[in-house]
Length: 144
Image (cartoon, rainbow, N blue to C red; front, side, top):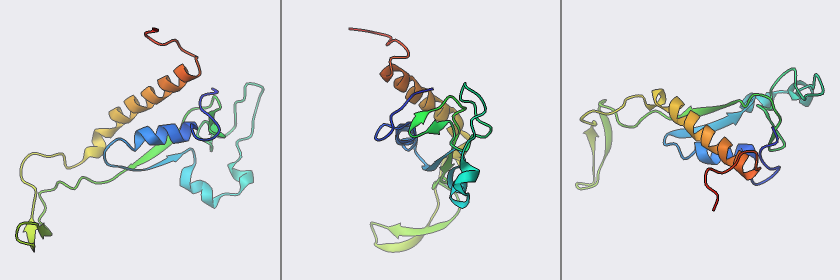
């Protein structure tokens, strides 16, 4: 708990910055995310159950005001489909300036989403480790 800042370096903004560096990522939502736009504040509020800060729900995704609150960190991402496909499509041939049929030949991933979870986990771990070092919750590996 207590990682992040309330404004520019909020956990959401730092994580989103790193997550959007993963090719094909097109969206990110934290906690209840976009569904929260259809809720009332009284529905979205995470009621605190005890003096440890545990809440009954986790609509905030473990982040309140840009700072982790000790609850499970929850976020989801959206991945675009790969554009490399053997399916015949039309595109502009820059050499002839004509629209022509085209398909990608060779060996390519037709679904990159299957490879993303391990990359996302690594990126998330790097961001959280960086935030812990900034908050001096863990020591640096090398101190000059």
